[in-house]
Length: 146
Ligand code: SF4
Image 1 (cartoon, helix red, strand yellow):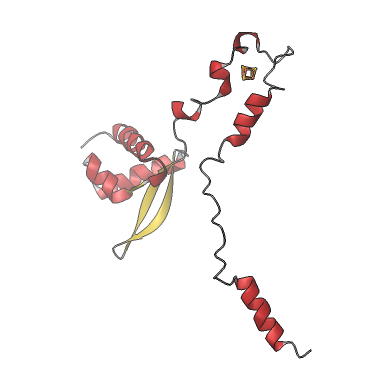
Image 2 (cartoon, rainbow, N blue to C red; image 1 turned 135 degrees about the vertical axis):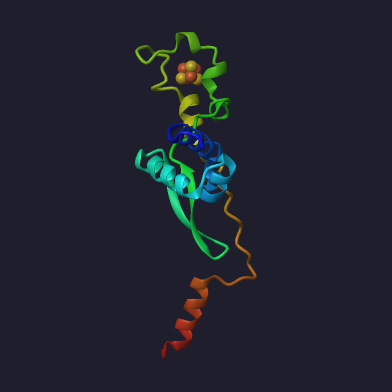
């Protein structure tokens, strides 16, 4: 049986690698070759240390936990299109000079665009479908004695 600290390290590494999907506690212990009792102790320990989050989940009629990392390592993909990387003014850019990240419109635009790319576009409303609000209004109108 692996030592508990080794198991904590391995478990944390595994959970971090699952990213936003997380992993079922039982799958994790199976993967690491630990007993469910030892696994539960380790996951509680990792949660107490603030390294993971446990959420109850019903799986095949039984309650278990899904484990999520509290922090994910930063990816190079998050900055690959930052305008500073290819900026001709990069060497002269400094917060204390006229060319400054404090007043750079390219940097500001890039920062404001972050997160917008992942947002799903709002679908255009289907004109054949009556919205709930409209349906409620028509019911209200039919009940209005005026
Ligand atoms: S903050 Fe603006 S000027 Fe400065 S390096 Fe980035 S893109 Fe260039």
